[in-house]
Amino acid sequence: MAGASLLGLLWLVGACSGPQPKSESPHERDDGGALDTSAVDTGVEDTGTDDTGSPPLPDACIAQLTDEVADWSEAGATLTLGEVQTCSSPLDGPRWVEVGGDLGFLASISPDVEHVAGGSAVVDDFDLDGDLDFIVAFREGQTILYRNSGDDWEAEDLELNDMGGTTISLADVDSDGRRDIVLPGPPVRILKNTPDGLVVELEGSLNGMPYLELAPGDFDGDGDIDLFGLLSTGEWEEGTPFRDQLLINDGSGWFDPVALEGDGPTHMGFDAQVFDWGGDGLPDVWVVNDQGSTFGPNVLWRNDGGILTDGTDECACGIMQAGMGGDVGDYNNDGIPDLYGSATNVNALLEGQSDGSFLDVTLVTDACPLDGGGSMSWGAIFLDYDNDGREDLLVAEGDFWRHGDAMALRGEMPLDLLRQVPNPEGRPSFEDVSTLLGDDLMGTWRAVVARDFNGDGVLDVLATDMTKRPHLFLSEGCTEAAWIEVHAPVGSQIDVCAGGLRQTRWSSTESSWGGAGIPTAHLGLGTATQIDRLQIRLPSGELVVAEELEGRRVVKVAGY
Image (cartoon, rainbow, N blue to C red):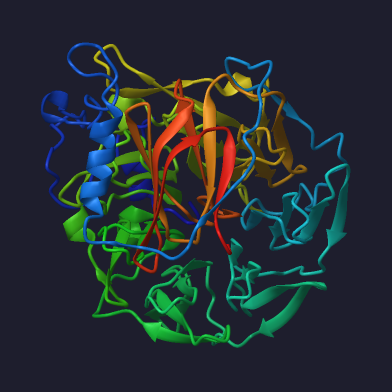
């Protein structure tokens, strides 16, 4: 919360007291800031059991999905089905072991450097050998590629010190089937992922603007990945605040900056999440802003046929935060995107409603682990860590110490794992199970990315730290609950019916603040072993469908 005003600090005092929506919401808070739950519909009463106590019929879930895509045409693309994995000694839940120390991971930044910029992490199979690699980058430290050969890890300094910006992104900018690395600059640099390795092929061509992030999405619907350029009012040029930009891909991997429509807001952007808010197949953008009390609330940019306009009033998601990161999920399994925003003192869980608005349900779900007193979270993601079919939360806390600050502001904070469980009324709530990752996990945490590194059907966790080596939490053993992992183009919507439960996920490379990863959707199946219907809506507007699939396998859209 760099340079936050005293007013902003006073407004945010109190642990998880609930950030206020900018515009009127379908359900308002009372004068004390507590949420009136009498009119809240979290959309879960029909997803678990019917009024007889029996699971809902699979046919009802399938009928709902088919009705939603009645006007869609089935694609020519097919699915590649991976082998069904056996699980001879299933565990009732995941068990992780932190292996970064044993694997020789390195601290790539001095502990005395300001705890400000860096700690970004990107996970992908860069050399296409079937094993997930990762990159960790710092503005004032090394950018290190950790190459995974299956049996061993090798660290390589990419020699990209002073990378600029705060986060790096993952996007196939030249449509060659290999995802590239985008560094925000200035100057902007794109590391092309070639058969010969990562090669800098574009540098300084994107007008030298001080982007904090370049978030990928096909905003104009032409099949090429464009970029949303997140800028910040905190960086002024001759008294004029910067505004976010669209960078349109001309098809060759070259980008043309395009101004956003209208006057639009200028705020202190810190993270951008690209997702289909309107349900029309076009990517919209939710921007999480820092110092909301000074520079303004979070913003939603609505995609109107390739033109981004301010839709914040319509979504009721313009909350005031000292925001750091965000993520998109569907925690209540109603098929509507939900949002999670990390911040200083107060995180927020915003539940998507059928009219496009969002309802702040942070308090009634216990979705904020922060304890006030200057606590701050950065990367924060939805994940189903135990494969029970309900999305949980992982929150990385860390300080923001800078030279000249009191040493009292420098300290370690926890890595929070929150499990989703039904409360006594049967509605979603969260409980702290952080000790599953290990005891006394304190650090200056930054990015978190959850992907299945060892292919056992359980999500593993990569977490970066400003002063220490990256941590990799690998699961040991398979879970009793089955799962499916779907690889699909960025922007695809993946729906699954299994055991009568509907789950919806979206294929994305983004993983909250500073994180990115191979675009997959990992869905736990709970007690179900078979997928009754798998439905993938591609960004092209086409549909890929499969029915009666056995779980515990990886499924890929062919050619992707």
